[in-house]
Image 1 (cartoon, rainbow, N blue to C red):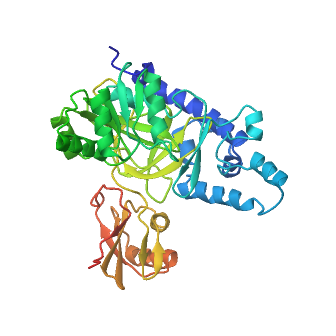
Image 2 (cartoon, rainbow, N blue to C red; image 1 turned 60 degrees about the vertical axis):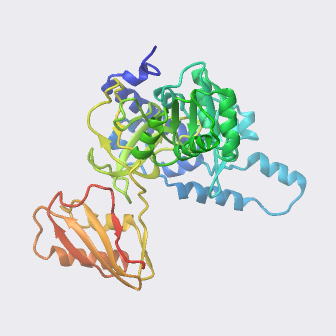
Image 3 (spheres, rainbow, N blue to C red; image 1 turned 120 degrees about the horizontal axis):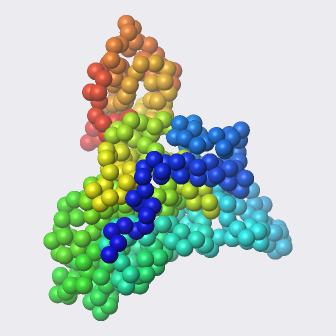
Length: 438
């Protein structure tokens, strides 16, 4: 039996990097030509020059709220009222994806760039699905979790509005599996379906799998066929992983989003998550687009090589860090630690919002400053701010100059604490809210 999904997983790392950078340049050119939002965002950028990590890091990070803002603007641009013919004309030309997608419907369908499906995520943010087989590339994660041709897969991800259910179903089909679309809820019915059909694998959230197994035990229903699972959509704690193993189910984590598809996946080595072959991942300092050193915690920023939805430097808002070395299973792509929290650490202090990007702005004003961490303490209505900064050899008067920068940037007063280099925690936190809310 093959140990890997395909030969891409075991490429020489230098070969992978060269091929990814060549694809990156083509993807930037494609996005500039066919995605109006990126034509604007990357105006003046020479696509043939974006062939290195450094060149990629010079491009702007695209945030989720920017997708939402542009989509809302497109919807607002439609004139209210009007005749049915006006409505039909508007429907044929409206860009539901805010200019970030190269596919859609109406006129795009006639050009051979039609979308297969449209999904809605909270916000409301709409996402396209193209016609490629295994569009979200989830088969790679399912294979690593042990799924093989002939398996019956019980899929408990949602099939309505959001793409989660079909993300997993198309991946399972690409492997040659059969899928039962269980969807969410109705735990007792899920148990009975499993007992009748005897699936070998489960895909869904780990917490719902726990509920199913607990309900089965309560009902006295045995589920001996279920031995493997690919789980996602939430944190997968080691305690729950071990709980499932005790009940005969080996579950492995996948990490993906509706916008990007698969980002990374767990293997039988259980040493972090291996990056997918269809994305370029950077770890950047929260509030900036600046890559951090390997091992440092930062925000996961992803460039997808999917031509239908060519998101370039898309900020996921998730925190993670690069692990050293390669996976013991022989997969040679970079590994990350997994989900370590959220990068959006915006806090409200004395009625004013303070953002990680403002902390980064303060640091940029003072060359030689390393990491910085803004600690907010005290009780509500009596907030105190202290910016802890790492500095190897602080110059005289540096603290006063930084304090002035805090006032200039945030319009708030804050203390400055000078720290030794390497003394601040490596947890990705730029703003720590340590206030008492009791």
